[in-house]
Length: 246
Ligand code: NDP
Image (cartoon, rainbow, N blue to C red; front, side, top):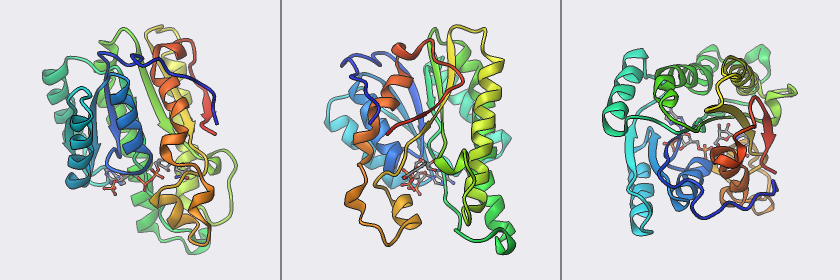
């Protein structure tokens, strides 16, 4: 596991958006960021799941969260612009974005990969990530210490048979991270990096590896040290890196 012990107040007064915050790794990150003092904006497509995370944050006495229900598969430029305008009005700035939402698609050879599923995966994992980042950049520019984190995968660094659009989308995510990090290289107030969570006990992992015993993989809570490190001030000098949470 990535070694980092986060101070309790690491994210005090920070405003952090987490996509796919209703379940899996995104839920754990939202709770962990809130536990370290952040006001977390929970973005996802299933309102009940976001409500449940909101309630958990409230019950724990962490800073009150906000909910944005948005389907990243169908959202267009106007939706992202409206979202940015709402956040500007509510918060005035954004200190952190964790691009975590993603879909697996199917595990199929390229020869028979369904083009519709291909486009869905690229839309959720890459295109919406680009559009959301673009819409929020002026808000992260208003932060004195902003961090943008993308979510990659081992198959986004070395292609693997049958991983199709998912693998290609993660290669693209690594590319987006590198291009943006280079563009912002001379801005000391913002950093852009990627996390490869590694095999983690979530619904997506269970769908990808139905025969495996989930107990053998760490829980989302266990992989949080890197998520905290990259979001907090201790990573200020880290930019353009793709790091492993395990
Ligand atoms: P899950 O499938 O458990 O969670 C994915 C989250 O993304 C869910 O909250 C889901 O919402 C949300 N989401 C999916 N589609 C959309 C959409 N169209 N609009 C808005 N939100 C959406 O996955 P994990 O937690 O396992 O994965 C999180 C990230 O980590 C992903 O980017 C994944 O690729 C990556 N990853 C995971 C690994 C693992 O072993 N688990 C390994 C390597 C990378 P809802 O619950 O409503 O469907």
